[in-house]
Length: 205
Length: 205
DNA sequence: CTAATATATGAACAAGTGTTCTTTTGTCTA
DNA sequence: TAGACAAAAGAACACTTGTTCATATATTAG
Image (cartoon, rainbow over all chains, first blue to last red; front, side, top):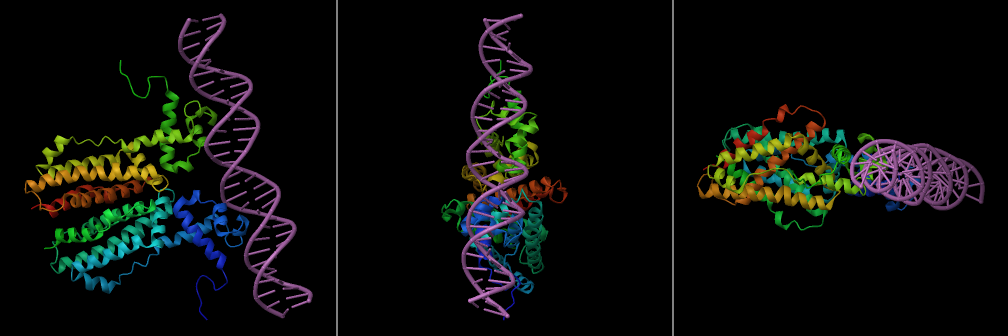
């Protein structure tokens, strides 16, 4: 008898509401996605939504939980191990970042984040913490190890991390924009790999 | 007798509407800034707005014109001249970018752009063209000259330009976010200068 | 000063918003 | 089969939205 945290009950409708809301919020934003649009897409009346959620905000908060829960998991040990070899770490890290960029669910979450970023103070704080600071931490630790092993030139690991992550973010934003308009991402598809190459050539000793 | 393009008429109120709208749109977004909020801030009734503009969208379009009209002017000759000296070009370009980031008017426009980016297809297209492509063009031309003069390592100038502009954008986004919450930008204030240093050291021959 | 014109008001509109009822329907349990 | 409970519908609410219109008030021109 498996015990899931989100209650074992028969919540088929609730799940559908969340699924639909994710799509609509990430397309239209919080204001643009009205409860009637959500309900209609689910196939129920607005009033029925309130059997599953207190109000609109509760739906949004539930959806927004997904924004920073990306399974971006490089174990601490794995970081140390890969970093000791230099370039393979950058490759692994970047490919994970690339996967997140193209993954449907994470793409929606990223769009939602961008749409609501300047409308939601809490989201801004989390962006700085979860998106920026956390990445800087992992990367700077890795670059620090590379410096100790004389694989790259010595300098401030935090600065190197900043320089590295900023380009990843920009590529992700651009790809997300293009895909939102169903534009081909061909012209930018290998930008992640190019970044790894360029950066490694720039810092390697 | 100076002839301004925006008509010489006595349009004090119209100007105030645009000024107020700029602030509200860039804070609350298109949907969030209602005509009543705008009118009330101007000091008139909603109905009076329609003596100056056809509708809300016309106000927005007038405001949005300012997004991509930044006086980011490095003359073609100046680019060539500075690029031939290498690092000074990066310094000049970056300092102009930094000024735009901290300039009140351009800051509002940048925020407006970010807020509406995923809600407005036309804005996305302009972002790609005016914000991205144009900068890539100027930068890649400069890097090309530097390569010809053997100031930096030879590689794809467009790639180098991409790597350079992406970090500038990320810094700008972060600073704009912090200032939106009235947070101190001390921790990131010299990031632009650090970027110039890091990048130049990375590419110089 | 008077007439014409531009700009303001205040009320109203139709449509949309989030939310709350009461009532009906369905589903599982005793 | 009967009763309990969860989930649906449908109508209504108070409020906000963009926009319009008739009317009043300034401002300008002859």
